[in-house]
Length: 143
Image (tube, rainbow, N blue to C red):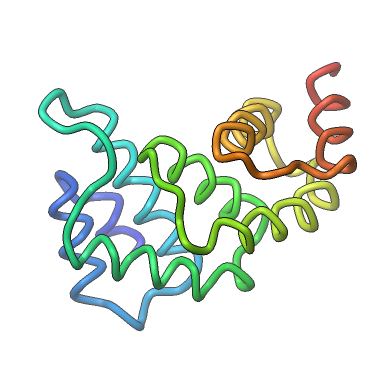
């Protein structure tokens, strides 16, 4: 499934894979689907803003249900993808809590760029970064 998401030619292709595999998608595949959707949306000159339609809503609902199973990389990817899609997901508060809890413990596995993009996304979505998360970003940026 992850390979199919990576090989999808466009937004519609990503959403078709999500629809086809539905409940069989794990946390990593859902984070990847949302990330590819954001990349396609940003690179397209004909589309802007967040996608519409029931497939997209179902994807967002599935992502929200799987937040507890996501690692730091996946949580960061979901936050940045939502920022790029101009989306304030219903699970935003829970995502912010998970980011604040997980990222400071796993910061060494994340690039400085990822941490900075995460912080920008959190600020734009008005999610309060914890002091531990801010410290993590500052220490990585100083390296």
